Image 1 (cartoon, one colour):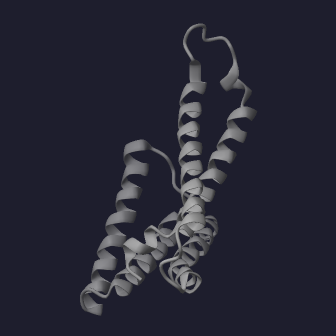
Image 2 (cartoon, rainbow, N blue to C red):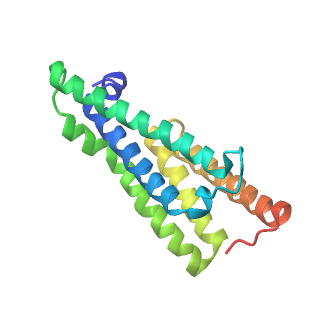
Length: 169
């Protein structure tokens, strides 16, 4: 199955629309429960509530459009390929592992600190994604992962500690 046909699969549109709809529902819930956004102390100025309303409206309408179009395609157009669920399983394994490692990374920051946990996290993901793509020799990918880790973590450390003055745990 080609990448373009997988992107146009109506079930992907419904899944993406549902995900965006969930986030917009969380956003609306948060915005309506924040009473300081809805005060009338701003006169003719719409106040701080304008931006959340605009963003959440656009997000909600986009989610609705994706769900409606995906549903329309499922009801009107016949399916063009088989094996959707096996492909979904194969292509979601890396994001699931990433989310799990991200949760472990956040916990690791508390126990071993920012620099070691960020270094391990960045190196493992840069190296594994480089090997997954498979371009270059393992030795070159290893050194690129080291360079990327040192550059990325070092830059974050420099910016937060020296430029902004925010301590990293």
